[in-house]
Image 1 (cartoon, rainbow, N blue to C red):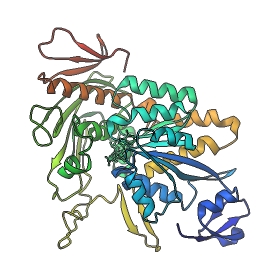
Image 2: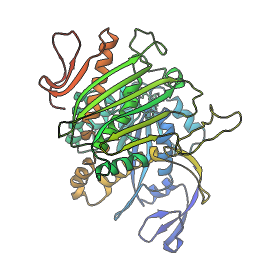
Image 3: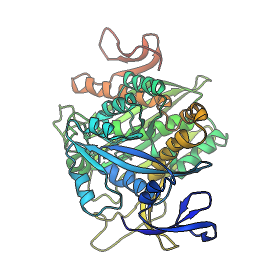
Length: 461
Ligand SMILES: NC(=O)c1ccc[n+]([C@@H]2O[C@H](COP(=O)([O-])OP(=O)(O)OC[C@H]3O[C@@H](n4cnc5c(N)ncnc54)[C@H](O)[C@@H]3O)[C@@H](O)[C@H]2O)c1
């Protein structure tokens, strides 16, 4: 990391922005080294489990920005975040990152079966988990049990018993357990929710969402872990959360159905899915229903004009909301580069690299902001006021429904139901329906022709 000139203010904070009048004295060097040696700020040490595609897209830029400036400023001074350690399967990507003279100060790079334990022992305050969707629970449980704050990529976990366990551990150890649903931070989705919560859009009735990924995802990027998996679990949850968060909480999840196709990624009779169609139905307090169809795939052509195709339409008593994540106005064609290397219809709102009008190079977007918010939430709990107020700050931060695990019950219930329905389908029994909070239990699978229902989760969802 290159050296910069910073100034130290009379209040003890450090900056390299534009108000030298506030400066007490000047220092030159690496930001973190200055902060730590001079004890100018509180430093939060973060651990990262998983160092794949999503690390590169969103965590890397968030950590790199945090290496240049504090993530929060409180009365007691600034708070910085530092990536202290990484745990992954092979460690090779992290080693490559470190060897290319990376923008982050050196971090410990652990790999193999003992990597997580090594990361915890290394000393971290919080752990971010970006492993494949069926490998979130173990690292989250270990980190929470060790008293670390946790941020998990969506879907948080695959079943309600797992969610219960993580929630209980977070409560016992007085730490945060949070999940990343970056679509909630998309300005268009914020507006959708604002209009609904303010009563401009009235009474949602139904809608559809689609999220289609290219074949390179199933055939290359995720090939190592894709056997037995499906594209809905890890991307339909973007939309089930958007629906649940935007149009809730005053309604009840009622039932879930799903079907899908096989034969491209794996055998036509196997348990690896090419595409999935999920339907979730909610009941409003006035007993009217709302149904949502969510279509996902990871076998669209690689020369598709955008990285991912994402479209929604929601219908209300008095309105229709139709939105397309790629087609927000930009259409780009570059000889010999689109649509493979560069895309014709990119979404620069999620994540983009920019030459800012004021000269800086930057990478930003709502995919990165949502991680930076977690950094600030941990900073607030640990350093946002006197130690005597920590419990109150923790309670305040845990009450944020957009990312707290305690508010992820419906999303996880849908994932658990979906996985169970697809498993029965792969076993030769398609078309089950899972009912929520009915006479037989919290989450119960009804299979056509089966004499008895199968209880997936006994307690209320
Ligand atoms: N927010 C988003 O839009 C978005 C986009 C893509 C993926 N994701 C989520 O991020 C997660 C990871 O996806 P990805 O695209 O980065 O996957 P990836 O396959 O590119 O990377 C997975 C990483 O996890 C590591 N890993 C695998 N098993 C591990 C284990 N048992 N212990 C420690 N490390 C392990 C691998 O070494 C690799 O570094 C998934 O949950 C996915 O749903 C989110």
